[in-house]
Image (cartoon, rainbow, N blue to C red; front, top):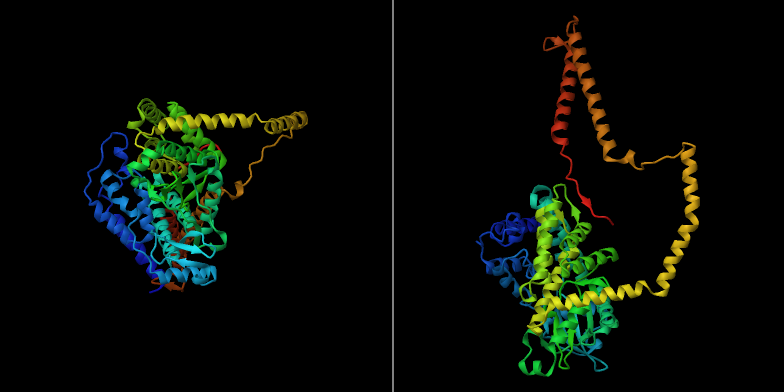
Length: 556
């Protein structure tokens, strides 16, 4: 079977899956009629069957299921519970294939690299599995090995999803509002980065440096000489899952402080360093015997640009302070306004949402739910929210689960509120540092020195009537293209009319050359005119289309 044929077959299989569960109530968050009224469409599907079909589609869709398992804004509780098992329950790859990948990537036989290598994996996931090994110098390490052939499967699935999303965006109202192509694009970037273990090793090193301020959190160091794009070797971490910590251990260690340190560290990662680790679920953290919390599996990390990072900070700061209108304005500035964007309704509903969040105790609300609800209201009101907002919501949802597992009494709202104040204070101190002030003074000096000359030049141009405003790129714009089409059609219409008139006049001239009893030249001219006329009509019916809906991004 050719690649194109297999690709079409794969796309058809994905479409059958999507159509099967289109009306099963899996994605209640996309039902725009129920975004704000508190009601939910009837759940008619079977969650376990949905998860089984998802896993049968392969690793790409297992990762998709993992992403859905922490999206309560989209997925109802029955499906969330079923999706939780996509986190761990994956069959392992035979040890011979694992050793072959290591030897192919590192160019050395496994027996020469390691003093011992355990063929039974410590864990097995959809993209890779982890084995315990011992280096020649006696150090215990964890070796993460990518599943053989997984990269080509992922790329094919992502191409199929991109094609389906593109068609859905142009053919459906929900697609035009949500823009599934952007979802798939972000999912592609995150998933392909997760396949590159050099990138993950860099993330480990960077997070390890950033968490130096939080000694309660431990990030294992990568071993660069034993790592490549498909093999990652790092320090071995042992301990208990955060969901399996015993009562005796809890009495000996302050797990609340551990949970708060983890939350503060992650807020720093996003708001200070610009890194969103979108996958800090309990399976990626271990409580070590010395009471520290070990963090690993940093493949899914997205970098946030400085300006977007600043707006996320202002959004969270306004939300915890109960300033809903300001929070709404920040999301509008980050997002893309569609043609039917209802700004007044959006500001009102987000304002009410934030006011409820600020007024309620921490036990009845959460920051992740707040962000997910803002995304849902954005979709309903015609605002396409940035992907960073959903990623931050997903990260906070994972952190909430982890922190509650460590200590159910932890007050996340209080921790977030106090840490945002701390980050704001640190920013103010940095802005008043000597080198920052000196830089600002140099900019002011440059402006003061150049402003009189520039103003004088402008006044001279105005006085001499030589002040001009140039609009670049008009000759290449869609306006010029459409004007040329109009001119071509008018010309073709005139030529068609002229041919018809000429044919009618020649019909009255006697001639010996005839076709079907009519003058040959007149008949040829008439047929040519008829062909041109049909062509103009077909071009108008098939080629003309409505203008694309206007979309407007916030100020950059």
